[in-house]
Amino acid sequence: MQISSYMSGILRSDTKSTVPGGSGSADKEATGVSAADAFLKEARKTPAQRIRDQMLTRLKLDEESLAAMPPEKREAIEKQIAEELKRQLTGVNDRRGAAVDLTA
Image (cartoon, rainbow, N blue to C red; front, side, top):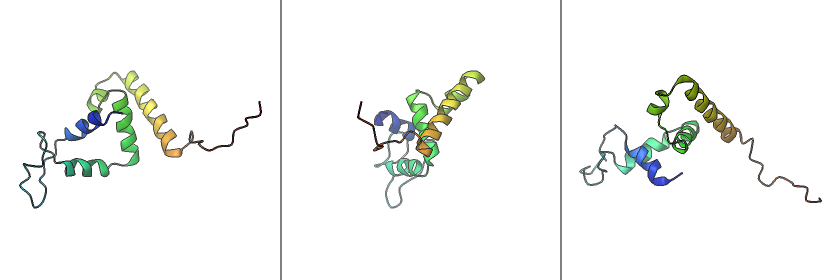
């Protein structure tokens, strides 16, 4: 996943707030969201939300385009996302350091 595309998705937020103690305009992006706001928005996400966002980014989709898809195609993508969530959250495929029989 490319960081620039990931961060641009975060910075496209509709929330507008200012940084306490500052003028606010100097440290905001052109979108009206400060780096601190973008960080806090990302930090508040659950691991499942982060994985879902990563999958959608990998598939070059967003929530709006996913919702606009035909039901069959959307279900297939939702199934992919659910499988990825299960894999990452349960660690099923995490077999690093497992013993391997090299006597062949």
